[in-house]
Image 1 (cartoon, rainbow over the protein chains, first blue to last red):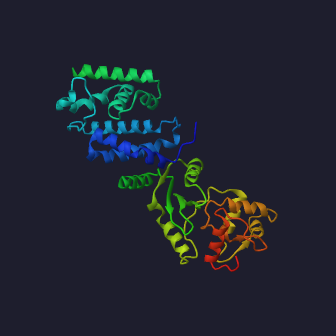
Image 2: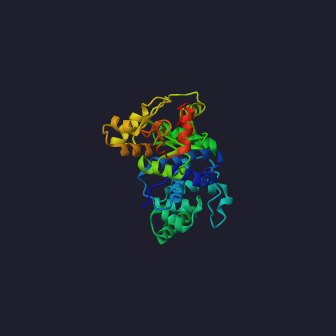
Image 3: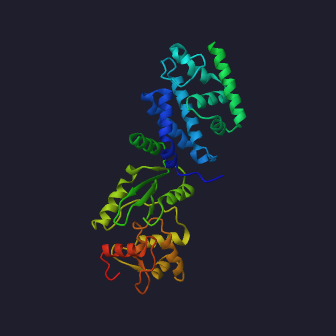
Amino acid sequence: MTALPPFQTLLDDHAADVMAVLRGAVGRADAEDCFQETFLAALRGYPKLSDDGNLRGWLLTIAQRKAIDHHRANGRRPLPVAEIEEPGGASAEPELDQGIWALVGALPPKQRAAVALRYACDLPHAEIAAALGCSPAAARRSLHEGMKRLRRELA
Amino acid sequence: MKVELERLADRAAAEGLLDVAYATVDSPFGPLLVASTPRGLVRVSLPAYDPEETLEDLAARISPRVLEAPARLDAVRRQLDDYFEGRLHEFDLRLDWRLSKDFRLRALRAIDRIPYGQTRSYTQIARSAGSVRAVRAAGTACGANPIPIVVPCHRVLRRDGALGGYGGGLPMKQALLELEGVGDA
């Protein structure tokens, strides 16, 4: 385990990415609040983190959690989420889009995290695995199960 | 992004999550890195040193919650500016001494009491720190001073008046003494 770098390096390297992901997930107007919440939560947990070499994945995991919290708190509002790619072109249907984060939020934790990291944060399987602390195969499975369940509930 | 980051530093400080705040301050010798904790100024890193290494060292020894937060170092910056302009003779800053211990801490506290424009010998510092024989250790304490300039280790010379050593290089030590009006330094 290597020593944790000064937190500022995380901001220097990843703040722009986190902001971009949050803008995609919650919209420009609310991204700033989620950004603050994300980095305050990260600061809180940082000294106890064991640096597994994927600080970016860790930050993006926190960001997606904050985005989901945000959507939960604003459950009834139309959501500016265009990131979820449903095979049937679902994002073209606003009604479907509206509730999708609520459905994602209702998934079991691993599936929820895998789905959000894949589609809100656009992480590849290997990084999802690192962020979740599991093997890439397990990450793929969680993602698959999560998507299957979402499709079932949307059908 | 600048506004967001300033706001983050403010909120982190308000929630007790900003353990080490740092900023860069211009000086006649090049950029200084200054860092403070909620207790006070903890580190001044001279231009001769790599700021990245200094920050990594602070992360390892104090806390990895290290953020660039210039607003929290305004008083330090102002006083350093005034000092380099010759307008300020005595720093009025709270210091966090946690990076020094035992003999070195005692030596540095003795150095901290040397008035502006005066000098002491390594031997005198060793004596003040409680061990007249520890002249070499007094020199080491100067070399390891985490808060140079503010804790004025540049005012410590060899007994024969020779400059001795300085972490920022002897030309800087000489220039600081000249700034303070110490003759023939």
